[in-house]
Image 1 (cartoon, helix red, strand yellow):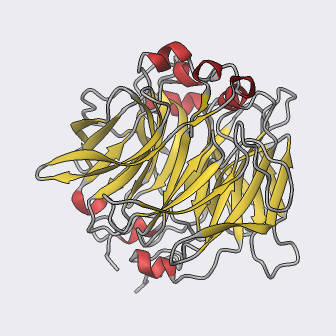
Image 2: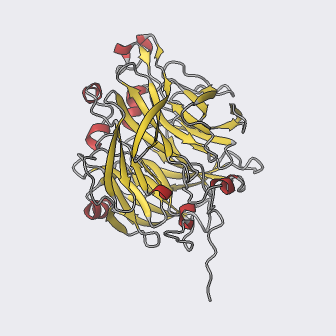
Image 3: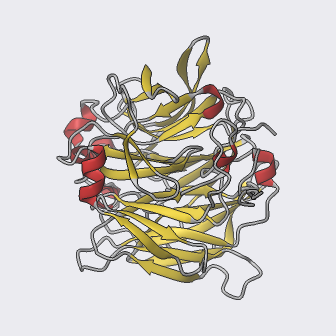
Amino acid sequence: MATWTPDPTFYPSPKMAMDAPQEELAYVAIVNPTSDGKPDALGVIDVNPDSSTYQQVVGRMEMPSSGDELHHFGWNACSASLCPNMPHPHVERRYLLLGGLRSSNIYVVDTKDDPRNPKITKVIEADEFQKKTGYSRPHTVHCGPDAIYMNALGSPDGNGPGGIFMLDHDTFEVKGKWEADRGPQVLSYDFWWHINHDTMITSEWGTPKMVESGIVPELLLDGQYGHQLHVWDLRTRKHKQVIDLGAEQQMALELRPAHDPRKAYGFVGVVTSLKDLSGAVFVWHQDGDEWTATKVIEVPAEPADPDLLPPLLKGFSAVPPVITDINLSLDDKFLYVSCWGTGEFRQYDVSDPFDAKLTGSVHLGGIVRKAAHPNGTPLNGGPQMVEVSRDGRRIYLTNSLYVAWDEQLYPEGIRGWTTKINASPDGGMEVDPDFFMDFGDERPHQIRLEGGDSSSDSFCYPD
């Protein structure tokens, strides 16, 4: 009688994941922002301090054609495969799925045989993906217990609605649109779930036409970008509730639910407020039979000389924090907040999610501050995509958001970089003075860690 042995990188609980071996490789999406025909790439970084090739790109796989604009990507399978209601112990954390945010192509990349030299094993062409789902511009990837979930920003014509679709764990065939009844939901960005509460949460950015050419000032000032969360029944795939954060809260982006499956709350980052250009983090949570959201963090804009600001901001005489990414440690203790505009990276103790306490802050780049790395290297861009190691000790940062938006807020042109923050388990952090990677004219975006990280997995068992 055959027995299945689950992938050793699947963990029943967050605590077991935190105790796993330290990552040795990191995968990074690398974007070519020029029109010179050079394709984007998936890079492999050696992050083992004991290795002779530490903090070097030790592998690089270029896309088969140019113009993808790789953005977010993720694993085909993870700890959710151990959930008892839909177990899939035979799948492996082997493949990375990358979507082209401009091309709408989806690439399935095998990392198993030679992790330093990943290979494309399947390409889902834009036409096939769009025909089977009605969606376009694939964005986020999450490994679920029953399938691979991805979402898309909109429809093939560049309008809405955007939404979620599914791919088969084994064949990577596109199963189709996820929603059975989408209710009033139109805008799409991130999605996550509370598996043990049969609940999906989705957030909002804008349709492709609203974001692909950069921020549209008229739409922003009119409050037309996303400012709502949507609550769904995970089993029936039906829309249940809208949580409106307020029309002044523009671009509700990254979702980070509590990792402990008993906890029914999570954090969402909001890019900016029309009231005062501040950024914010809200907690969504259950309130009886309903869900609601409470603002728990506000980061103010910083006054600035208009002569030092890009055209988009000159009239405000201030630089907004521009909160573009957040991440939550696996023990649900520390929340990290990227302020891409001011160049600040913040650490909060959120042991009590309704009483966030600032416990650390560092500066790297920034529109006005342009803070240098501790090794003396001048920086522009700012802390953007953030990935936290399973044990919570290391945080990896990249500095590019989205090519069209990069040009608006950093018109001098972003020079790509990656760095690492060292975090204390008791709170506090510092930039690692010995870890810095210059990507030159290319722009690194999201990072995923070999064996998983703090934003890859969902768990069905408590610690």
